[in-house]
Every structure is written in C-alpha cells, then in structure tokens.
Image 1 (tube, rainbow, N blue to C red):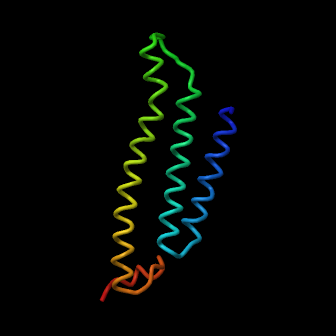
Image 2: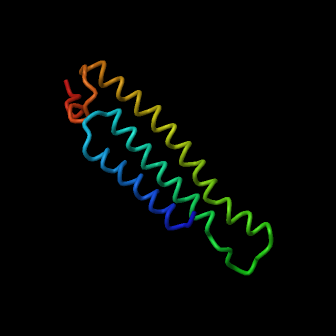
Image 3: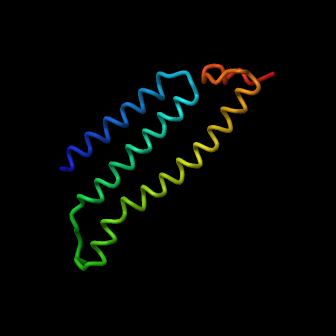
Length: 113
C-alpha cells in the first residue's frame, strides 16, 4: 500500500467523523464521531512514520528505529487520551440524561436551573 492511499483512507475517515460531529444531535453519536477522528489521526501518524525516509547525519540502526517508532508512540498517546475522553464523555452524557431525560447535545446548554 502506498502512502497516498493510506492518507486518502485517513482523510476519508476523518471527514466522516467531522460530518458526524457537526451534524448529529445525539451525544453518543458525537463521541463516536470524535473517536473516528482520533483513529484517522492515528492512521496518518503511523503511515507517516512508516514511510518516512531517514535523514540527518546519523544513519545507524538506532536512528532508523527511533524514526520508525515515533508514529506508533504518538498513536499510543492518542489512544490513551481517547480512552480518557470516552470515560469523561460518557459520564457527562449520563449526568445530562439523568437530569434532563435526553441525550441531545442541543439540550445540554439548558443545564441551568
């Protein structure tokens, strides 16, 4: 698979997630769309890391290993942030649903009593 095709897949997944975030009313759907966007960023980070050409004066095996693993390490951090975002997002959705009996994002701005 070429770099261009992987980037096209990542861009398509990101665009689907962006559409979901901007157009859907349900908070659960918005959270799932955010996860799609995070996964698209992971795909592109790993693809850039995989297809990056080693540059610089240090051309040893250690430099090549460091260069090729940067995208994977970045993806691990994104997965960690996404897990925390899901836990916090679901907790907020449950709190809104308990108080308002709805999980729509448009109704969340009415949290004042």
